[in-house]
Picture 1: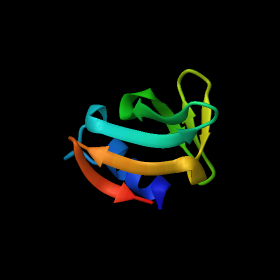
Picture 2 (picture 1 turned 90 degrees about the horizontal axis):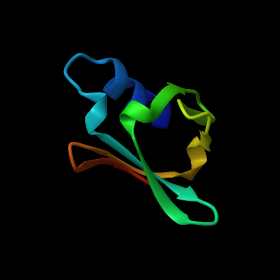
Picture 3 (picture 1 turned 90 degrees about the vertical axis):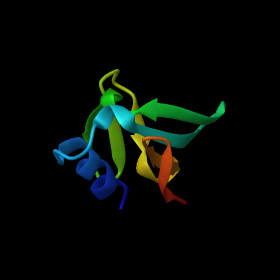
Picture 4 (picture 1 turned 60 degrees about the vertical axis):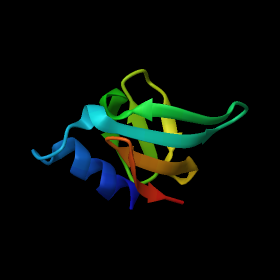
Amino acid sequence: MIKEILDKFRWHPDYDVDKVEIFYIDRPKGTSKIWGDEIERVGYKFIYLKSGLMIPTHRVVEVRYDGKVVWKR
């Protein structure tokens, strides 16, 4: 589900990936946020960032587009 949502925002011409916010459980910090333009690629198990960080998709708790919640666990 997360892969499909993020792929839509990344590849569909009607959307701007810079407006995507992804909130995830970050141990030990609690909850952290990344922006859509930080994503290198999205798999079914991980979100791969340009920085080399890999975020497990099961840790994603919320996705927003242009400030509006589009998906929430």
